[in-house]
Length: 513
Image 1 (cartoon, rainbow, N blue to C red):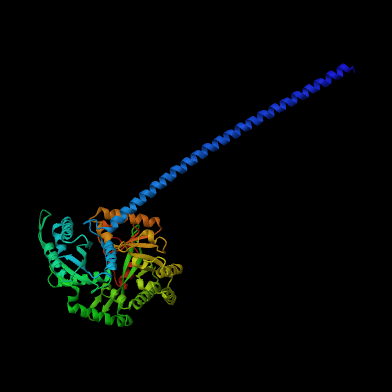
Image 2: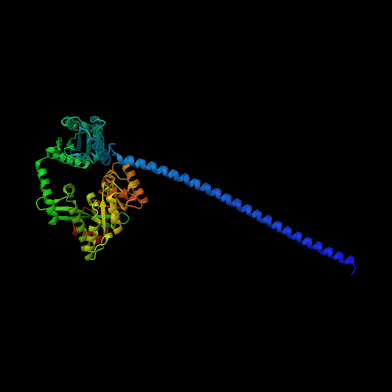
């Protein structure tokens, strides 16, 4: 073959190889470009998504901050409502206790005299019944205004509930100064009230007075003694004042006899339990019972706990009394179960002094074992005064009870010094809304707002809410609308003896009348 032909063929093969190589390079370049475009597009999409995510997070954070600000505002509003009586604008019972406690702490280092007054309007119920609740509310507001005008700015005035008012008269130079002020208050509050229900209303007041420190060293004792003196004024004819140290000797004699007989009454089984059902608003089912102790006295008849519980606490009998109630509850649960009944949790009150006893959980465990009762069959109800020191002995006892499986409820919520934020870390599953809130629902929109806020906050903290003292249908309807879980009160059932409680338990449902 000629050389020129061979060279020409080789050259063609080289050109073809170059062309194929160039084509492959071009394809590779196109592929790389496409991949770069895709990577750029993916990066752009990622940046867009990241921007959207950042914007979403920023918006969520703004909403969260706005929600926090709203909750703080509502909390502040709730605190303000919780500190004052919505009808009169005076301090309420809770704030009165707190302020008086602070003043008495300072008074211990002072030579001045302090007096705690309890005032009750005479025949107020008749005014409500004849002229209507609107007139009664207007009268209470007028009484509050007169108290403000007759007392000093340094004195503490509160509406304790209903038609009861309390005053702490501060820093008097002489105890005898109280005579003139008390007479002025009785006379001033007894003057006719114009413009109430388009007519003149006449009323008077009965007053009781207790001095610090002569008649008591803390606000609870002083209030109780002033209240006792106030009822002595009513018994003596009303429209007058009575000092605690001048209360009828017959009352003191009865109290002395009850105090002396209480230990033997516990030992002789003179105490009995009555039971009040707790009704779930969702379906009116009875989901619990509260056990309330009574003293079946051979001479005085049935005595209610208000006449002997405080006495037991003051004189060292509360542990024996509390142990009797605990054992009686377990014994009753076992008896009902032996009859084949479906048992609901049975609640009983526990004193702050009992919670300071580190052996209390052991005694409960022993009692449960003795009667064959489950820990979940009982519920202990404690008051806010038990929780003043959240890290103290009371809290440790509560945790021990929780670990055993015992339900724990906070009784009379709203009358003490704690708040939901303070108790959220404690082993409390239920809060019982004090009946003063329920009573105020009829006359105060603010009370309704406060009740609804408490229920909402409690549910957010995974707590159940029980409302006490329900006596009217409109209260029941409001509480159900507000989301309350369970109610108890006279409207559904008064506390009843064991046999009647058994009938209710077998019935299972308690429809409103």
